[in-house]
Image (tube, rainbow, N blue to C red; front, side):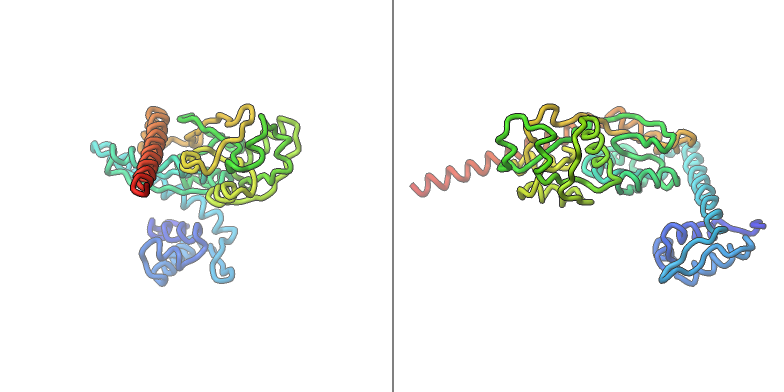
Length: 330
């Protein structure tokens, strides 16, 4: 049984099992739908059992399909790693860097990826972004090799390396009434229409833990799954937001948002790069993890300094233009 199965059949099945659709799998593999269907049929004949069944406009895995999907993913991943290691034996540093990042980290990760790519131009990159629960699932399923998030998951055995500071805090519009209050406390935010990320996000988990440790009941005013929407609502004066400061560096520099004058605001946490403890990292991922540990904080600091300098230059330019107009008008 399975002695006639091929990598092409496993790749087609793996794509369909991930995407839930033959058409989407065909698009990803750059094949026609009939070609993918043929590979699936041949694999089912080799397995001696149906692996897929129709579900609405897509397909879903049978019990045998669930079993096969796990093995297919592991076999294909091992084959990919073998290719990378063989290339390394020949002195070539190449392969695919598969990183999963919580949505908050997408604000700081691109410059780090660009800097790494500049040092290793033959490396390909695959970045997947989601909330914390989604990234944990991807890491457990070995869909990503490294995960970037603010706290190692308790539900998985991982090896984690802290590579940068992660400030998080309560923010509001400069005109919000609480800005005029001297050192407001958590209890003062109960009626402030607290804006927060959805359950399952790392930011929300930190917020819940903060209130629990303080013994203050948490009352969420509005729940949003987007950092962008949360920032804009907060800047418009619709409430107080709890956010990673990495997500709103532009708004803070422009004066659209400000930190509430609370004691201990912002909180200082850490960013972690982590992988499954029982799994050896591919060469490319191990190199990127070391790159983050060695250069991550410095690159993030440099990015923030450049942002601050650019904002100051724009303000000076605007002030100069205003003075010139005033002189002309006088």
